[in-house]
Amino acid sequence: MTSSGNRTTGSTTGTTGTTGTTGTTGTTGVTAGATGTTTIGNGITVGIGSLPHRDLDAGIRFALDATSIPTVPSLPKRSPAEGLIVQAMLGIEGVTVGQYGAISVDVNRIEPLAPVTTDLQHDAYAAVARFLELAAERHAVQPLDAVKWQIVGPVTLGGALLRAGVPVQDAYDVAVRAVRSHVQSLLDAVDVALPGVRQLVFIDEPDMVDLTDAHFPIAPDVAIDLVSGALAAIESRGLSGLHVCGDADWPTLMATGPQILSLPVGPSIVEAAGYLQQFLARGGIVAWGAVPTDGPISTTAERPWRELTQLWCELVERGCDHVLLRTQCIVTPECGLGVHSPSVAERVHRITAEVSRRVHDQATATRFVLGA
Image 1 (cartoon, helix red, strand yellow):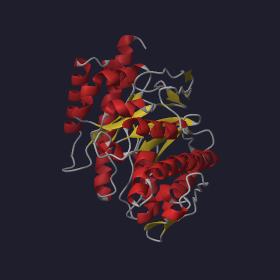
Image 2 (image 1 turned 60 degrees about the vertical axis):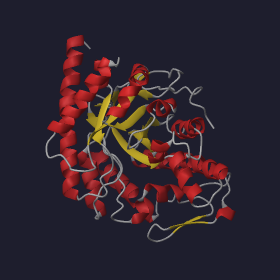
Image 3 (image 1 turned 90 degrees about the horizontal axis):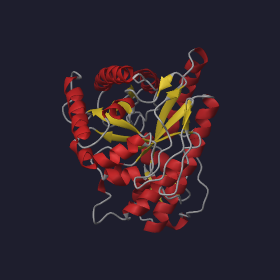
Image 4 (image 1 turned 45 degrees about the vertical axis):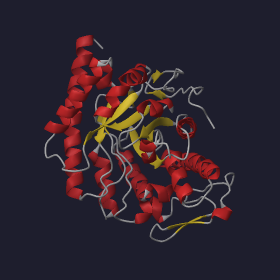
């Protein structure tokens, strides 16, 4: 297992290559820069998690067009097998996935060192496979610069195995091995389908919102090592991201060493402004979940834009660099959209695009003023 405190990454983005710097909040080895002609930062958009489409092709075509960087979705309304937990458990010895995504775990057959397989022909990966087919067709005509995909992280997967009756040590050992194995297989699949296209890979860790709870099954330093190990599997071939959809202990999350931190717009990050500034200063990129996906859905960009800029003002007052907040910025929906309708998904992404445009205008103006 790899500790973030000792890990150095050397990912390059476009022609900019920086070596990660070890610090109290982890390591980051990426500077916001170009991937082909797409700048990773300046308010570009990516998707988060699930979409509500029941039709496979409709969902994939929407995903290809909805964001600056096309994002592989999961389509749980098409099939429950497309849930991220099901995808990650598929291929673990001792785990059986039924036709409709039902999971059965034979605890006696769980073996932490057993190989893990990734079956892209399984229904759980139907959206991944079809995305790669349609993206390859598009890439042949209009080259893509980058794609983004996500996979559940070892802390959340380990928790699911634990709840299924697997002993705690085995649960998390199996989880990190499974995630790393699936990551390598998916990186290979994308490279084959889309040669030369850069990959942004987000580790999705919803369980980490409860990391500091007294009853959480593992200590924060163990969680840091688990996630750091998963991120390290990405960074030789793509940009690593960590997504948590909710309030969390942000310094601990930054200590895992992601190159991109994906978090919802909200007040909880303000208390971690000092850590966030260190993250930005090392070249880290923040994917701001600026458009709410829970509760009343906005009809215009005004409220999401106001809340994002107000948060940035508070962060600047606490010491964050106003230029880095804008130039090392990705804009996303707050969370996945699988529980909504396709029309709501379209509206959320339209608003996300408008917030993105405003961020890009500010980032461009800032660079112009500074002579960058």
